[in-house]
Amino acid sequence: MKDLAIQKNVSLQDRHTFGLPWKSRFFVELEKEEQIAGLLNFAKSKELPVLILGGGSNMLPTETYKGLVIQNKLTGREVIKETKTFSLLQVAAGEDWHKLVLWTIKNEMFGLENMSLIPGTVGGAVVQNIGAYDVDIQRFIYSVTAYSLNTGKKKVFTRDECKFEYRNSIFKSSDLWVVTSVILKLSKKFKPVLTYKPLQILQSSTSELTAKEVSREVIKIRRSKLPDWNRVGTAGSFFANPRVSKTKARRLQKLYPEMPLFYNYGSTKATIPAGWLIEHSSLSEKNRKEFLYHKHALIIVNKEKGGDVSITKGKRTVAVVERIQSKVSQGFGIDLRPEVRIF
Ligand SMILES: Cc1cc2nc3c(=O)[nH]c(=O)nc-3n(C[C@H](O)[C@H](O)[C@H](O)COP(=O)(O)OP(=O)(O)OC[C@H]3O[C@@H](n4cnc5c(N)ncnc54)[C@H](O)[C@@H]3O)c2cc1C
Image 1 (cartoon, rainbow, N blue to C red):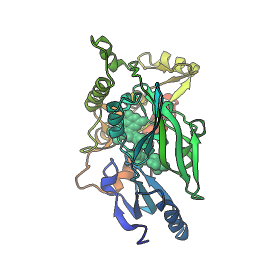
Image 2 (cartoon, rainbow, N blue to C red):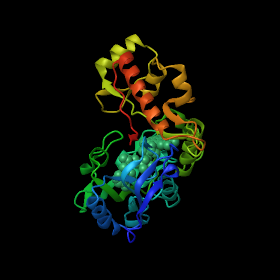
Image 3 (cartoon, rainbow, N blue to C red):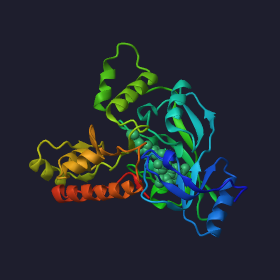
Image 4 (spheres, helix red, strand yellow):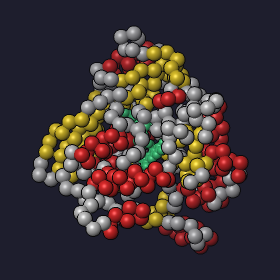
């Protein structure tokens, strides 16, 4: 245990963005892939469950974790292939996502700019298949390397094998892997994606638009809309936007003509903003004030972050999450699926 640098009874309060006094029975920072076998043996010998932690920006803890938390701190970036049109960039999964985005722009590798300022690690980004402003990470994935938590064996996944879906992947749904690195295929030519309405202001730019300008605008929009997770506890959007059949969407729109609907290109389903459903649900004013971010009902917050807050706040938050699900289900016949992992 000493050789592996495993610590006992460690506070994870500063290692996740919701800011609760969360603890783990055993904790270790993963700095080298070679540690993985020993850590898995340690967990097996003590019959401990294992939780992989990235930046902790997509988690809601409710009690002490009774197993081994492995926080991914693997770092490294390397361009492994370059052609006239694209670069293959290998990145360790513990790298900070936003810093990576800024670095790619500086080094003229394009595509990630709409996903600027999303908190967390590169590994977490793959697991969650992050996305923002009409771009998601899956389209840049060339391959993903991960180790099985069962056997300790390494596997390289092609993009298809990752089974990416909206805010989901094989890694999120199976919980059987630790992602250690990713190869991204990035373009040498910048092609802005400005389909998200607030970004369309950039279309009127008189000079040729740069990736840096798009990234800057994304950062500006996000800062104006989202809470600063350094001050307010949050895990970002709590629920995925539900997708319903066109028939159901039409029926709902007859009842609620002001309800926004989106049809993703090529999809047979309609997307309804979960935030709108929560805003128009019968959730009590008291719950709204305590748990919802005032600028966006989809963001559940811990306003006591940094203050005298108990871990029971996690359980109370889950109770409100379930209340929201039940109110939206009763009101609209729609099931909301949490994006955030609850532990
Ligand atoms: C203010 C704010 C804004 C956000 N905005 C967005 C947004 O615009 N779009 C979006 O998609 N998300 C958004 N998020 C959610 C979150 O930032 C992303 O899901 C992020 O990619 C999570 O990465 P992480 O490293 O923090 O993962 P964690 O929260 O540490 O982990 C999340 C899950 O991934 C697993 N995991 C993490 N790393 C690994 C690994 N290496 N191997 C295997 N499993 C792993 C964990 O076990 C857990 O199940 C936002 C969150 C916040 C707080």
